[in-house]
Length: 95
Image 1 (cartoon, rainbow, N blue to C red):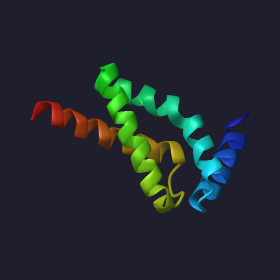
Image 2 (image 1 turned 180 degrees about the vertical axis):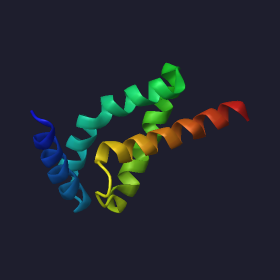
Image 3 (image 1 turned 45 degrees about the vertical axis):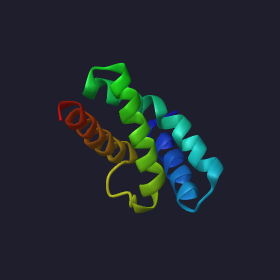
């Protein structure tokens, strides 16, 4: 699948999930889970922390998906959420 086909597929899933289609949200999560977890592991360097970050990102994805407007790519949006969640987990471990 080419980059433009992936983007088109993502866009369709995102729009459907934003409309409340549970199956679309489930598929979007299934497709992006490994990407999120890999980024979380790269940010934290710890498998348990990466699991925690991934969980936080999935919760935020569920709660905030309707705010995604497509001004950046969906993967960039997820990257920012993942980075922020990794920072939250790190600060929680330090405090």
